Length: 380
Image (cartoon, rainbow, N blue to C red):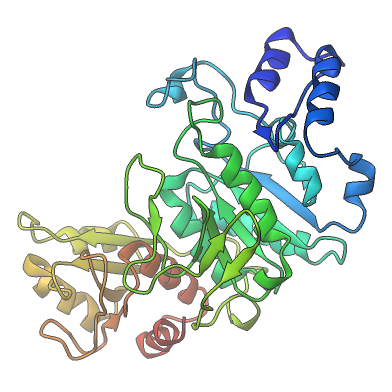
């Protein structure tokens, strides 16, 4: 089937210029491509390049990376451009560099969501299924940057495989001026196929950096250097010459995880109570009334619940829900026996409220005993 003219123009416009060669040309550009190849390094046939390369499974969800703005400067309202998101095949088509580092299989499902815990459950089960194949060496999931840290941590806790699981996205749409989409995708595929990434748990590849799923967080709304690991630092770099790691994750993950989703039909409902100066009493009770089996308190400072203190104490005593004490600060630990600690409360250590909620919902698939769930927070 012939591509529409607009699609052909897009593939021409977005093809990268690398090593002095014009790449991604279609049949109308054959002569230009031959001239560029003569001036730059010799191009190896894709068939030869593919022999012995790692085989990576690519899954694509909603988000900025596969988005198409109305023009190159449409960096803010591209969701309303009217252009459909690109499929996995369309993402890799203008990037022949990928064929030099990996063989990529695109998942048959056109879009994997991450908007709910049950979406993450389905995604995790699919990735675990894919990685069971001896022919697959790693997996890459592309999604919106807003919740990359949550998806990566969920996969870190639930995918039982030593093979690399890499999550990536972009801050600018695929056709945006100076977009990070193409390089992040290439880097993620490189990382997923790197033997050195095996056994590292789920990883976030972004802006040439590797961060561990447990600690990484988004720190900037629009800038490219958004994903960082506060206090502890990144794991390594994805550089032009090689992938280099400098540290390894310490907490339990993937193959060492006790969490299995195979017999879990849906995830327990967990809610986060964000505490601020104007928080009114009754919020935590309302969450229980809505059916929450677990509540994470995103407290001020070292975990202070402020006006929610009395109802939290009651919820713990009546065992209406498991309560986890965390902080909205963004770094540092919540420790047992602090000023606002109540007997029967679980402390989140240095997990962010959103990651504490993920671990809590997984813990609740196994037990509602606060002591056992505290053990999980100590180990994961």
